[in-house]
View 1 (cartoon, rainbow, N blue to C red):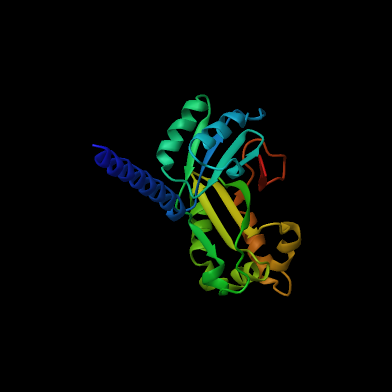
View 2 (cartoon, rainbow, N blue to C red):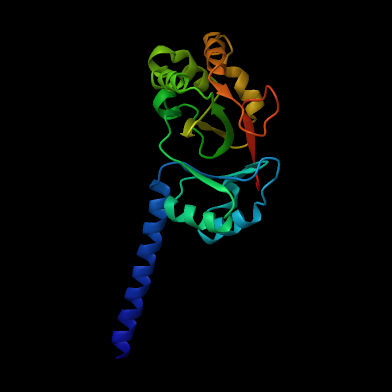
Length: 232
């Protein structure tokens, strides 16, 4: 009996280890995605409930970002639908959006080669709206679908600025932009390198402006707003 219990206990340990490995692998191999919580305009959301949900679901609280009435959790999130349901329960009066499958994906390794690849990243998160015109929205998406071929200077600028990854998601007409840079780097110092000796990037940026506007709650003339990390 003791020998049987010994092997049973050992088998349980092995099974637990396999479950842990499979969960961790699933998270690592999951695509980048985001869940956004939007509350009433003019009221800041309390992030503590989201931090509790994140901790219970093994999502680091460093993955949580905020701008006024918007909270976003971003990363390689396993079981996004399940996490969305828990967030809905924690924020029953808020709108919950999922951002999956970016329509634009700049990957440094693919576009710039292995030079300058960073082991750790800081993720900069911004949001804006596309203008409320379906035809212009499609033009905006078309520009991004052909950017690598027709506007190679833009991705060259991202390479020069040491951007590791740049993703653009959408939900309805709201855009979520993720700029990943080497951990500890300063976006304000890197961003000017995208246009250094590269004027066509300015042309691109000027064209894009007519397709973008601020989300509700932004100031007049304000378009993209930064979501700040809740914790570091």
